[in-house]
Image (cartoon, rainbow, N blue to C red):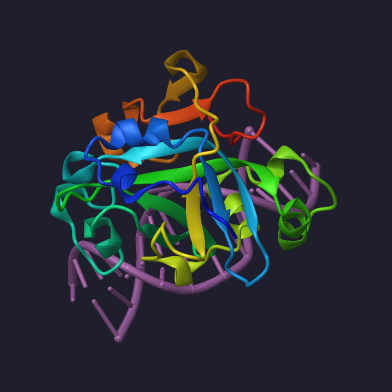
Length: 204
DNA sequence: AAGAGGATGCCCT
DNA sequence: GGGCATCCTCTTC
């Protein structure tokens, strides 16, 4: 597939993970995990996880275990991990130095390969539940632990800028989902949603 | 070596 | 709106 809109590496070499969380809204996430099966959608919801000082981050307090290792790599790769035993969650690692920043992709609006995604999700027709929610979209896009460490400049998973930029007042900011254990950091407004988009995730 | 718990979704009321 | 499925990773004994 021709990729003239591919996001360059510089986009991911950014230490301001809150900025990246917002800038990823409107970008288009693609996968071709199975050769010939291209699926993709516009990112409409993200959450930023800010390095070692963010209690909600897997890398809080400098924790560097095997699972978290992708976060400590140079920006531009995927951090995929298993949640609740069966849900794969996709993060975009972003940093210039060795700072474990990551942005969780929480929802996309389906655009390409919609029938494939419907099949993978076992649904009958297109509805917001197809890709609204971090585990729903990974299933629709066929993302699993095999994509952990994968480069966003590679053939299996990549992000494009198709010109869907949005203004600051079109971004809804709120608390992150499911991080009650994070004490005061649970209240940080690091969840970003595209205003009036029906494909954002339902919780909260 | 074992146990707890988690950045969730689904199906049932 | 609540309970459960299900399993890997990390922490602690």
